[in-house]
Image (cartoon, rainbow, N blue to C red; front, side):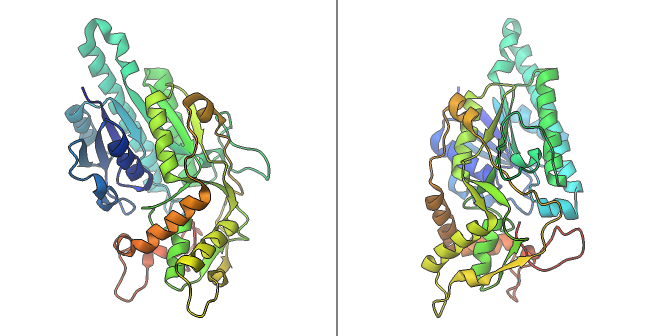
Length: 373
């Protein structure tokens, strides 16, 4: 019998990459559960629409009754939990949606998974002890729960939690809930913490799409502070494959941090994008896009550096990044240039050409100048 996987947040950026990968390269039936908030779009999974193994259910993960109905209707063998509010700047301006979705929503899903395991165990009868081992709950989180690194060192599975923003604090809370439901109730949970993702279909509020779209519009490219904050950049297709490995081979109770050993300062990354844009979308008169880079007030509590040591997932699950950074970044820039209609629909571009979605947020005060995240 074909196994069924519920993917929460499957119309979002990372979730849609996971859904497309599962339909393209796995035998699973996929149930995509998504509320379709501002950052999610059914356009992101148009590639799999109509596939007999794909089902979409519009639902809020905080709605326990709806989630329970979905679990009973599809009898899932696994959950890949990616639904989350994820934008740090938005969490600074308004933390409540992050508390609701990331904490309460995770609790609702863990409880639904616990009841699913109980039903399976009851059905199995004498083989009840095998019920939980046939189920997996992969909880997808972020390296931001670990706080900030100095100029040396790396995050790994033993790094203490030290979140800096409402977003990262809400994800840290969800991580702790997932581990508690494993230890207390026996839910077979696998936790993953990833570094910064990039690639096609990312909502245009994060650093890379903001830079590309500002350059396309002939606008300035604001960089927080001095641009010396460091991130470990992970191509979304590589991350999706890591999550598939965690689903199929991850050990319940284990944590796997996922990164590509690809540290870049924000400024260096912006300059790389400018160089690609100079080639793919040159400015009139031949000036470099780098001239558009400006420096703006830093984000409150901006973590200095993230870096991941992915040795555990490499050694235990055999995962390694497939795509070189230069190749993946170029493909990402080209995707945004080739998909202007998608960007316009996601931003709700107004008739006067302005983009309210790109206004600067996250200063904990009434700033309106554009900025990156």
